Image (cartoon, rainbow, N blue to C red; front, side):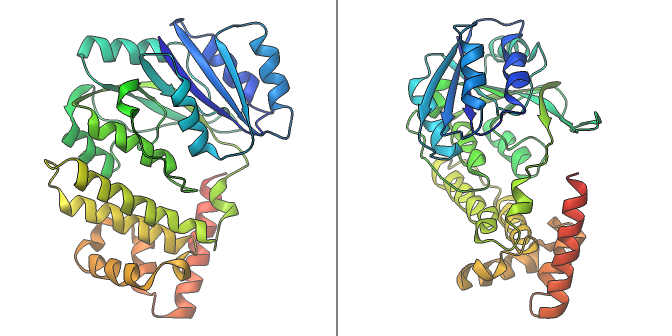
Length: 317
């Protein structure tokens, strides 16, 4: 059986369509662990209505604890041998679970990973560029992950549930899902990739990034990536690609700067990343590279960050 971990928080506009997409899967041996994280809108009422018609929905209510802790709570009560994660404003194509399950079983792997597409309010659909279908090792998967060739998200994947045994809870505002996913990936021996779309990532008007411009929380893009890199080094001795890890951390630092979080980064981390920049600057997009280069030119740097944020805002619409 597959346990679908399904955090719910104030998604009344999206939850019915999202849940129906799971209930309509052609693979039927699953449970939905719907954890209502203290919603203050009508999400719970909609959830209860659907659960009354389908016993595969298991509802758990809790005071608001945040999505990271909510997922951990759901994993503790999951009954399935396999687990996947779905956000309650997103949609699964009807064959998603069967594609992922068959890929995992046929290839005898620990994780199966599929492609995704972005769905915009105007109906526009944008597909993610994904590698060819193949089975890869843990180190190959991490190389692809840190270089952005495969998804860092928890979703669009099916995992053996045992991979999350003893997983450490990290409650970053951003990239908390990456912190949980990497712990499973480090334990996995083999991962199967399929280029078929198994997840529709719905773009809506509640972008968390925009609401945190110039906020301390934006430093999570650096500190979460630092934690992830350290975790891999400590727990997977055969992983030796230090250059890629350095670039991965530097990218988090640059993005935090571009979101206005520079003043919240500790001086020792600032100095460390400036050293990384000297040898790894080519890993950054030109806009981020210029922002890092001009950190000592206050007015110019501030203007560049402002322009960068305008570009982010337009790209999210």
